[in-house]
Amino acid sequence: MLTQQDLKQLAQKGISEQQIETQLGQFKTGFPFLKLEAAAAIGHGIVAPDATAGRKYVETWQQYKAAGRKVVKFVPASGAASRMFKDMFAFVDADYDKPTTDFEKKYFDNIQKFAFYQELDAVCQKNEGKGVKELMAAGNYKAVAANMLKAEGLNYGQLPKGLLLFHNYPEGPRTPMEEHLVEGALYAASNGEAHVHFTVSHEHMELFKQKVAQKADYYAKKYGIHYDISFSEQKPSTDTVAANPDGTPFRNSDGSLLFRPGGHGALIENLNEIDADIIFVKNIDNVVPDRLKQDTVAWKQIIAGVLVSLQQKAFEYLRLLDAGANDAQLKEMAEFVEKCLCVNPMGAKVDADYLRKKLNRPMRVCGVVKNVGEPGGGPFLTYNQDGTVSLQILESSQIDKSNKEYMEMFTKGTHFNPVDLVCAVKNYKGEAFDLPKYVDPTTGFISQKSKSGKELQALELPGLWNGAMSDWSTVFVEVPLSTFNPVKTVNDLLRDQHQ
Image (tube, rainbow, N blue to C red):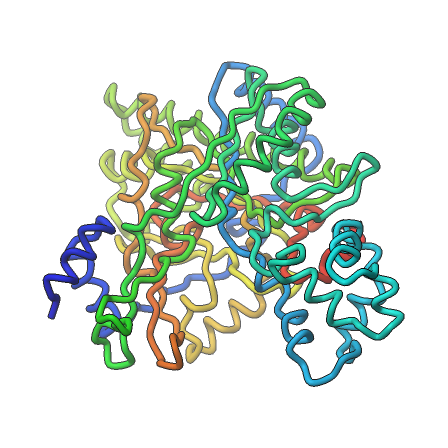
């Protein structure tokens, strides 16, 4: 089935024949739905620390950082902003000229509130000979929208979300990239240094580096720290082959195989290359202005303190296992694994080998917020490959929609995953875990796409915070809704939290 040209293409990407055969097989077999035990809830997989416990966890985190540990803030930032402007692209192409939909009216009625307004006004003056207000007064709304979206204007339709102007400040507007630098200084800096890592798409790498070079010194002086800022791209070896509806490889017009990015799950490879004791993971668009950062900073430290407390206990037990634990100690460890790490053996033999397996693996604490109907994943108690039950973050695509009981769990789930993770990626001997070994390969996802008018099937790898972290120890902590402020459309920037 594979030609010499195909093999050459695979070699260039660093993809093996075996990987392609596996992927093509997955198109034919599909992926199994996950077996659910229950939606996680307060007292049943989700911890809700009170004020006293919160203060204790912050203190634990501060002590941990003071011991000279390396902390990195990892920000997936490769997404282009095009989806943010879907409605405005539609307006530019519409057969009417004035704002008609509620979305369009809201955008133009509030246009001066956007942090990018001054730049948009300047580019309209340059390209159209009139400012935004004049163009709108003349009924030329489409010119305003086009100057925001197109390359000859602000090019916001193609730029990465991380480099758009989100928030206004007296000293000038800020991008999400800058807000993450500020966050890094406020909760992730140790030894006077903040390590921040952005995953960026290849075409935006230089622009990102330029913007960081322009801004980093300002924030370093402002917060009295030094920044170590690094970048990586999604690896070509994590791309997945596309297939025709019948499962055969989809080919481009020149006969070459069509590969597509494997989704955010590909970033487990990037995460695996980060040298750190603790890594915070947070999406690029979930940021707020300084006036609202207090809750974010406090709760990031709380969930980090929870992680460190659990890790210290796990390390203590692993050293005991090395020394030869007695029955009473094994019983204590089993209780810790079940009650604190929320792993139910479900009849498995709970011996020293079992306990070592469950204790000696990467660990993460995930902040979860009360469910307010945002699209995305939720926290569940789920059956694992070895028959045990543990906590996982699931997307709706992983759930059998024909199973009424499961759908009720999903729709009535009390909490939502805002991608608010803090990860411990070294073992009790100080060695880095090999993170790809902890991925559950059966948790990928097939979606229907098209190219040049031809239908195709696309394969997504197990998601970064879903199946890619399936075999980690996972704990959920309820965090306030004030820490979750994503920007999915341009009009989300008009919400109070972004003004």
